Image 1: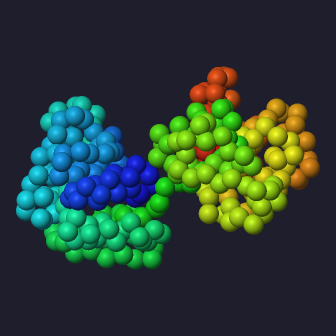
Image 2: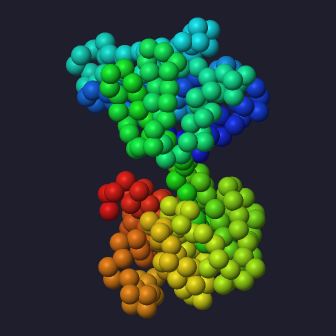
Image 3: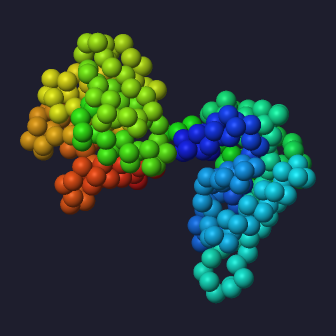
Length: 295
């Protein structure tokens, strides 16, 4: 639900300004639709919004619905059916619900602190609850939505080549952390967190399992091996390392990684580009594919 950090940032910004928020959630779709069940759009009472659920016409419709929800304080159910039946577009169902700053956003505020649970909402009332299960469904007038926090990326290295990678991760809404011995802040100023090590061995005292994916971009054989050793002891689901094919084959042999499904080296898909930006794209594409079970 909160897998894109930009939604959390939007809520925090609205909270700091004392603004109320409407959540527009896709609860069910039939046929071909732009946004699938679970996708959402947030709108505050200044008319600012985040999230895309479809066409400009649909976007403006939700802006109008948000005004109604703020005023009535009641959940609105809406079904969007294409006017032209030959358009190839499907049917989408939504619930539009307001959450108020004075109530600390009520259920929405509680959802922010309920990662790993599912939020259950009624389309007919303000009724809600949380359960300790991963559920994403809409049945009997109840919408079940799994609460997942942003995908977390750990990047080793802070050279200039790292900045495009961090920028692309940010665009995808992933939470970014850069770790290095001596961090060049200018190159990684857009990262969410920075960890500067006092010694290489300090890496073994950190809980790396709190990250979903990691990419070693340090360009240092000595550092690379130590970072890789620490990552292999963790439960990080994706471990990528930048380097030439010959050196990567040596790493596979040295660490016995022939059958390790988490290890990707050289990191990234071969998309034919060689600029820092295309390399960042190739890495993020591979991480996204691994995240979605495509590789």
